[in-house]
Length: 398
Ligand SMILES: Nc1ncnc2c1ncn2[C@@H]1O[C@H](COP(=O)(O)OP(=O)(O)OP(=O)(O)O)[C@@H](O)[C@H]1O
Ligand SMILES: [Mg+2]
Image (cartoon, rainbow, N blue to C red; front, side, top):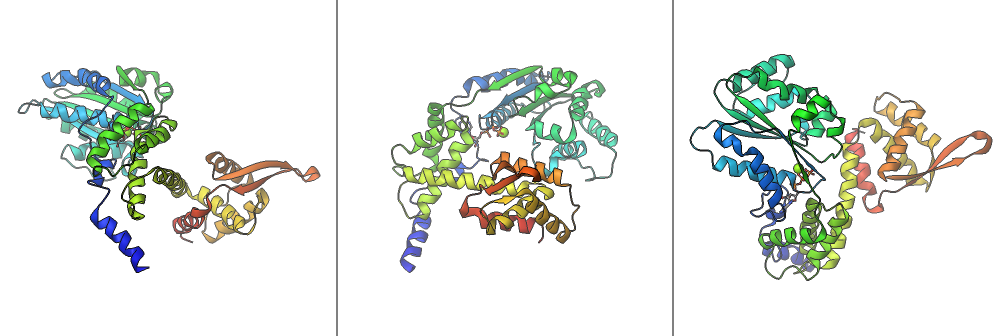
């Protein structure tokens, strides 16, 4: 035992594999961004007039997840700010609308921008109109150009409706001194189609599409990042290629590729290996898949968690279960947690959603004169079953 612990502690302390792990984490801004020159130049060209104090066209950037949208826009933002001379009145404020504290009301989005501009509004309490007026008052105090970057803007629209984008795009007509330019970013490729046409045309005066990376491009990205992250010779041949191939299958997601490499490094380190090998990539891939499932479970609404826990409790004792049993167990759990009991039909549709998410397998079967039911089996990997249950129990305060 002691020998084994020695091995674990030694390899971590000695850092035989990682030189600087943080360079593989998602909040790290890389120095070079391969295969995005064209997109970065396009963004820069569209926003360049801001350096002369002219309002650029509003810009909408979209592309699948992990295609480098955020990193490219942030890069251009930094480069623009470097070139601002004296007080030429250019401000660029970035907001990720996916953050929980931000995205659920128009009020909070505005309050967050107001805070970024160095002023304050009460966390709640004012009518939305009043927050708008405050926002206008703050920015219109001086002649300035404000570029507002709304990353993952679809998340906010989903929760609030597109009226808030409409309001933002109309702000310029109420401003005397200041001007606003909006940059929206989204990985929902159909986002624009579902917007009110007026909002759509003003938000996407300019549009840039980020194509997904292919496996070769992902290899280049991984190589650049791994030079900073790992000691020389700590990555075996074929490792970068395998990470890139896995991530290319996930529609070319660079985040997935970097996560794979980082987690593989952690696993290798934990096992006391001196190099990352192909087997570590496989292990990392399964770990990431499992973590993804746990994340989904944790973020489900309460009624979904109750239904899932009912199924898991029953599946502990039976290999397959039926909808009626689930509903009875679900009702018991609702009583225990003092939660409203939904109809069986509603719970049935929640079960279908879990089937679609791949957490269970449900099969319709006919019971002759007794009508139809569904036979349910678990699809949650065995290794994380108890972790999944603990998450549910904790989140439901059981
Ligand atoms: N060309 C690139 N070079 C280096 N790193 C990159 C490149 N493209 C993406 N990355 C890295 O991959 C990760 C995902 O990129 P980014 O956050 O920009 O994706 P995104 O398109 O904004 O995805 P999402 O829609 O999910 O927000 C980040 O860690 C980023 O640093
Ligand atoms: Mg992003």
